[in-house]
Length: 68
Image (cartoon, rainbow, N blue to C red; front, side):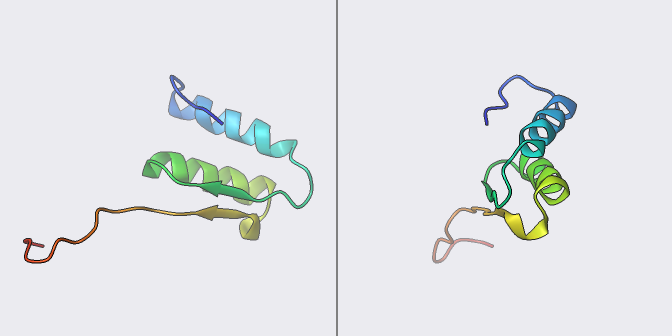
């Protein structure tokens, strides 16, 4: 699903529309900006069930000797 150019409310509505017509057993996987992931997780939990929606967050690798 591409959400380029949509505001937060439109993204949430688009996600809900897509997930509402998903087949039984559908799994959703998301990575991306935190607000987008939160919207996908919320829509997924509502329409697919909490166990059917998964997220993965990425962070820069730690650099040895770098200030924390």
